[in-house]
Image 1 (tube, rainbow over the protein chains, first blue to last red):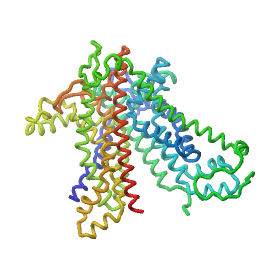
Image 2 (cartoon, each protein chain N blue to C red):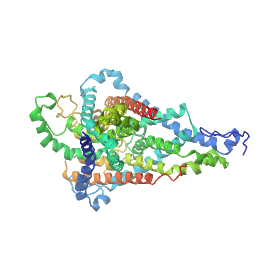
Image 3 (tube, rainbow over the protein chains, first blue to last red):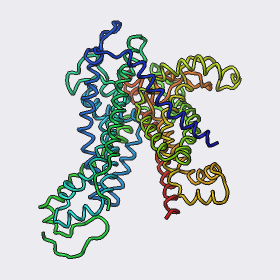
Image 4 (tube, each protein chain N blue to C red):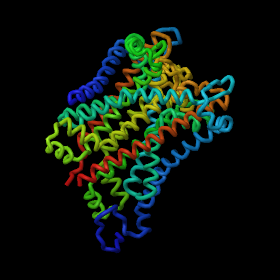
Length: 269
Length: 328
């Protein structure tokens, strides 16, 4: 029986290597310079790339962070430092609830909030949806890491006559920044691969997006559209895009975890 | 510093004994207000989300009432909308996923928590965390190009020949369908089951294990008869969490389920889930009733995951508290 559980673990982990291997094999043979630099060719022609989708994903992630990270970060500071009791538990409960909402439902919400009023699919709407998904992760981890800062540090700063705000800004947050940075990176990695909330917010675009109020292409949506298309050349490009996306997500993840494992630079005694 | 009182704060958050005015001057009240606004916006967003889902699905609620949930006709041309095929598809694919993922995931979690040396356990857990981070559209991609052909050539003949008399394995296979979607979902939720179950198993107090071993039980007996029952509720929690994930998963399912709003007993038949029908038809929905019916489906999905997530959290909290309560 004991060996059987080992086999279970082995099967589960080997799936990761199967995925990686197959993606690298299929994506690696179809990736080329044009993939990064050219626009998609018209339907039926082979060749072309996804430069617009790569830029689109970067734009979406940047805007999403500008929206989601401050709310999560400052909200987390409020939970850890300023509040207690009922308000805090309402905020925590909302964040947990938001975290559990299926991504497609987040998409519907962003559609109702941003697409309907502007009457247009837009980069902004996509970024709004992704930003929403970053909030709960950033919020809860900021709170957790701030709470992990030893009391001594707080008391030391207060004893020196620093105000509470000053203590937070110059002592507590710097002491916890590694953990918070990790959490933000993990949140970014999670939304980088999200497809469902973009389907009817950022929509898609076969050309360069002409601004924040215009639809934009993004890597995950292009992978979806190309994978279910009937064209051989599009399948090839879907693999290449899959490799780029998975590479991006895994690199951010590994980076985030190494930052954290270097340890929080706070003496524990 | 206008510190008038001399009491030394020793426990709990340090509340300023300074006067209100000096706190304003030093910015503490302003900082509190600003961070409060950010925190409150999280609550506001959540309330707005529920409100938008509710008000934007008012048309089908008025026209069909609760029949929306139990009719199986989905016909945009005749303006008839029933959610049953999608609810059925969502539940069936999730059930298949759990059927595969639960034994594998719990087995792996037991191995990681109880048997593997800490170094190996941590390394494997790291890899499993990476597996959980793989975007769902990548799973969909692999599903379309690996599992669908595999289903047609290997799995379907293997199940259909010996077990074809069972209604769930009857009928032709197109490669896409409930079983394929369930398998992709299983691969996706295994990491969640492993991570949470491992955590719960690790929180079982040491003395429980030592007592069992001291009474002469083998390693396996102590694990299976003492540690696992102790962590049972938490493991249930991890399963609920995985189920909530599976129910709400969109892309991987949409790409391999076949997208046909029918209820069939056969797992080989193509079907549709709540998330996949929203993903496929949302941008095509031309009139208000159609669009609002899709949003109504979104509301149903939201409620399902809401209930499951709540139950999961409750069970996990109960178990970990039980562990720490006895350990102290």
